[in-house]
Amino acid sequence: MSTTESVATSSTPAADGPNPGVSAPDASFSDAPESSPLPAATSSASDVGVATLETPADSSSFLFTSEGVTESHPDKLCDIISDAVVDACLTLDPSSRVACETICKTGVVIIFGEITTSASVNYEQVIRDAVRDAGYDDPAKGLDYKTCNVIVALEEQSPDIAQCVDSTKVEDMGAGDSSTVFGYACEETPELMPLSHVLATKLSARLAAVRKEGTLDWIRPDGKTQVTVEYTMSAQGVPIPKRVHSIVISAQHSEEVSNDKIAADLLEHVVQPVVPSKYLDDKTHYHFNPSARFVIGGPHSDAGLTGRKPVVDNYGGWGSYGGGALSGKDATKMDRSGAYAARWIAKSLVSGGYCHRCCVQISYAIGLSNPIAVSINTYGTCTKKNGKGEHDLVKLVESNFDLRPGCIVRDLDLRRPVMRKTAAYGHFGREEEEFKWEKVKDFTKL
Image 1: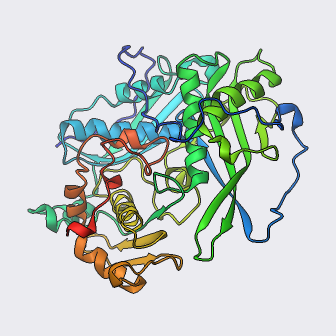
Image 2 (image 1 turned 180 degrees about the vertical axis):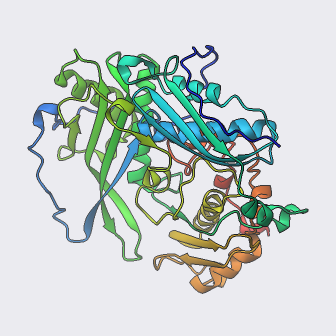
């Protein structure tokens, strides 16, 4: 067992190596056009201040907004660093217990928390590699992986917590913390995720892609997106996307680029490859860098902190999310593994045709191996498939999902070093092999 209790400041250049980056979801829908027709109404930074509050003319419609951030947003950078530490520990010791928080600001990254592991990890190198992958390679960007100060302040997990998690059999493992978690699913997109969230997330991923690929030489690492979708509510209580009402993109940029070029490039190279043309019309509003200037960004502009983007990490404001952050934790922390299980259940119920949308809540008490409670809200969309009403769905879930902490870790294979991949562009709605909680369970075969 090893413990790190140190405060180390260093500017030793990190060794250059392969740049795995952060895996981003596919930034286009299957029905997205290769080249959408240029919308009639566009806006650039010069339009700042002209936006007006608009409500749908149809009384059955409503607006809903979700946001996204790039992997280099200071808060996301901290999530990535924290999860890079988790993966580094799990790679060498799958039984590692990790609770790692990160703070970043101009020229400095600090990690602190509790880690119990047999692994010998070069935490400074892990941090520098993550900062490099996020694109911070120059002091002019506010952070340079080669020269930034790195402070490591880690201790062992409290023995009071460890004794209630330790067990001879994985099935008997107690919850590492008291937690309330949520999972959500709906029929709006192929991913069974809300459209507003999917679009905001994929626009953010596209912002990073055009920087990494060199498509836009003026773009810098930091960035944020917002997508407002106009919905109508069906008679069955199902929100149906009608159109994209507005798109907001703030992209960090070089000093010399003009606002008009920013607007034109973001429309052509970011919006059009991602947003299906069927959702865009001549009334869609575009606000590109509405602050008119975004040269200073990243940790230089705003301090970053692990766990400060829960809406981005979860469902874009739909459904709900639990009381704890997802990143920086191993799977004995139910804030993380329980949330993955809740999404697994919600997606399986919607995919299986038992409801059109649902929110699953699971609550745990520290040290106990069974959940305190499970509840399911279908928002009145239960289909009563196989005679299962809404009150029957909890029994269906409890008979098909073992929600004990150790069994979730086992069934979703959560001791693998796959956490860093989840840290940017959403923990849910991803189709990569590592996201096992996205593989629906077929009740008809059980």
